[in-house]
Length: 529
Ligand code: COA
Image (cartoon, rainbow, N blue to C red; front, side, top):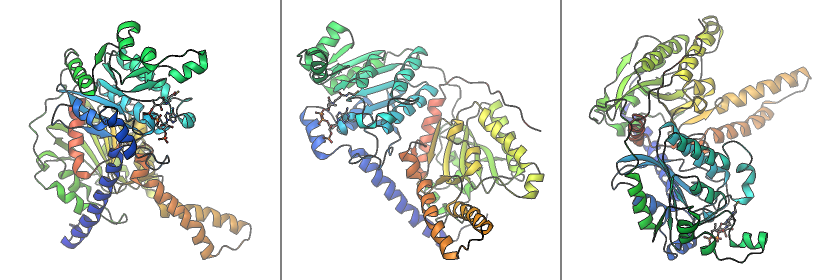
């Protein structure tokens, strides 16, 4: 690819910095939590705000990789992005764990559909990576108006319990801290944990609160006697440790984390981490600001790799898929990055590369920026369907940890082939400008207009160019809206939107976590020859 002119580079960079400012504004809205009044009431009750709780729990100065920060953005009236919950991977007592914290300043910490999916996604990541789960419970249970997205199906509230039980059975520690009034589902979550801490005078647990109890049985009872810390820790045995306040509860939790038994051994030996030799800040200027002009993804990956060192595999063959070996924060990784559409040769090269990485237990990183697979007579006759199938078989079967970053426009089967959500990468993030869709807005509008025109012609109906444009404009707009990274983040179709400069650190943390998971043998599906 030709090098960018300094003018183009600067224009790209300015455009990208605006996107980064927008990302941070959205995150800020999510980080504030509930309304000012609700936060003030929370503090007046002598309780710590959820982010302060997470900070107090984590080892000082250790990184925290927040997940699904922008879930539900714009979905519910008066509810900030984040789905009334904080989830992320952090370190407690030097050990990585998954932290799941209700934010009771947002609708009493109740679970919307988005919250349930955020909780179960965090559990999925914890399970795959064998991360102990610490749940800071402060929730009124289900957000009652949203029951269709909470109650009936797989991945709804009941799945939280299923995941807790499954993880506990596999020896993945489940710890809960009851920091507020926890009703119904909010009470079952701690009840299904290995060890539970509860705060005196603040934490309550009951399947039905005093009002519901009165309505159901006529019994008059205060919340302390029905589900307070003293009763549960000395009579019912539902909780194990009493804390005097939030700080004390989090200190007890840190003590529990020190007693989890031996950590699993590392499956890889990382080298000392080296910053990239080429300045990562240049990524902003390298990303094309015009979706029609491709980005040179080889230049991008060099700015993410340790020392900017990349040993490229088969550099002269199948050039539209760059494959090769690098390290990220000392961990070896096999990178596959698009450099144009998939041709047969690129798919075959990628298949061979994935096979090599699985044999060597090297994790895979997919940098996804692809319009799809080549179409046309030449490609079909050359067996592109067969070659694409080989690549998908290799990618899907590979049992090494896989990670996907959407660094550009990921469309159609190209998106799927580059380890989309359906192929269960351990994490999938998008960059702020990136897009995912079945096809681009113009192509979708043209395809549908072509079908319509053919039908009109068959019926002898006239369809003017103006009418066609009026038909296409809303389709284009809808495709633009859909493909946006923030739409994917709001729906939790991805684990979040990352600043390109954060990506290397996020991957380093994820590889460090995966290093303590057992090796799984890969068994490939049949390769069509
Ligand atoms: N579903 C929907 N909305 C709920 C809710 C629920 N289960 N529980 C609370 N809310 C809403 C409230 O209507 C209020 O909304 P607003 O901010 O628009 O006024 C907001 O959440 C905060 O509730 P509030 O009662 O003012 O706050 P609180 O901190 O004093 O108490 C709870 C929080 C959760 C302890 C309390 O609201 C409660 O007991 N809720 C009922 C819990 C329940 O029975 N759940 C059963 C689920 S199966």
